[in-house]
Length: 111
Image 1 (cartoon, rainbow, N blue to C red):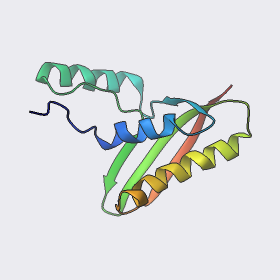
Image 2 (cartoon, one colour; image 1 turned 45 degrees about the vertical axis):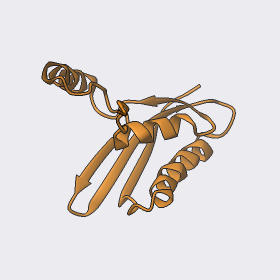
Image 3 (cartoon, rainbow, N blue to C red; image 1 turned 180 degrees about the vertical axis):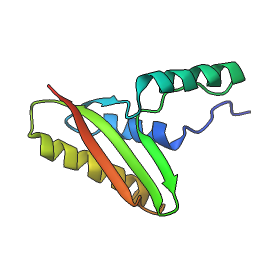
């Protein structure tokens, strides 16, 4: 019996961003207090507990992705931000999924 469960999309995208050259941190895109409250509710329900750092929203127009990253000072911020954006878009292409209608990568910290 396999006890491993597949990670959800926000968790997979967070892991992806952590492996992009120049990205040293992935920050939460939603306010901290509501996210913590949701985690408590998940724990009470005995659901898997985890705070999503990358936001994935499904709307009538399609999926939107929002991420906030911390980057090193080794390269210009726009280059690292573009690399993170391209990695997110490539994730969907590589997995034969429809690309998001919107991908927003914000820089939360440099250094």
